[in-house]
Image (cartoon, rainbow, N blue to C red; front, side, top):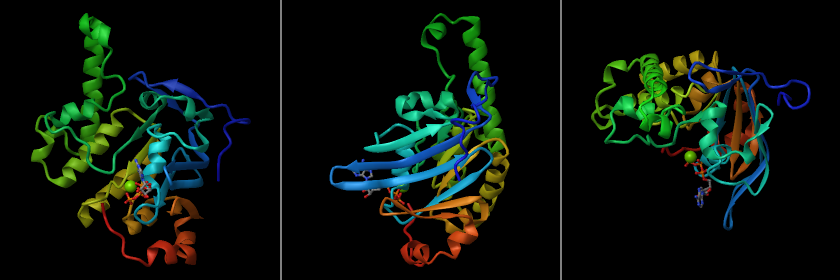
Length: 277
Ligand SMILES: Nc1ncnc2c1ncn2[C@@H]1O[C@H](COP(=O)(O)OP(=O)(O)OP(=O)(O)O)[C@@H](O)[C@H]1O
Ligand SMILES: [Mg+2]
């Protein structure tokens, strides 16, 4: 359940070497959020939490509202109602561009890589420190140092994903599974305390899915993770808790074992074939 950081536990913050605000008592709290697109109710009173060092799986049939939930958290769409906070701070007052500075990173359901940028350039684009226009125009020493630091973080993220040797190539020349790693590296270069992953396993081989599970367990030691995924076996294997959406509503929330035993879930989702994006 939700950790209350609002009243009893003030969020502790420190600045990482890249200047990103990192939060040691991080918790995403989504409360009673609704999103409408015209007559379509994409989210209807959705609540969930993601604590630091926790993986929360979010599953549900196509159109259940999983990506919409991420879009609402990331301020790409405005909820019709509800609250969204991170470490006790309302995100509804923040611009989307501020989220990396608050320690929140996200991957898209598609790859979202720029084909005319190299792998390294794509990953650097995920850094909140990548540019400060006026300092960079003046080519100040601080600007040079920042560029080196940013590149160092990007290379470090590529190294963690085991693809540092692909830094100088264009993503289109790489197999799908490697491109998916680039996408995660791009999110990690922001050194997030909360990572939102939208279908990271789509299109991966079973061996690659196993490697992803190992990676997620490692990442959990440093951050909270919200994992949207159709690969239910993977979600059950790696998640501490699972929330199930159906038609914009939370129909179940609990441990993987509880979700597997939930007949509402098997009726709505687990017993049915699911299309992969
Ligand atoms: N920008 C938009 N404009 C209008 N309707 C939208 C928009 N984005 C999403 N929707 C609708 O909101 C509902 C939820 O969509 P969403 O993409 O969040 O589902 P999802 O759970 O991510 O599905 P999938 O598993 O296929 O990715 C769907 O009915 C979808 O058609
Ligand atoms: Mg989606």
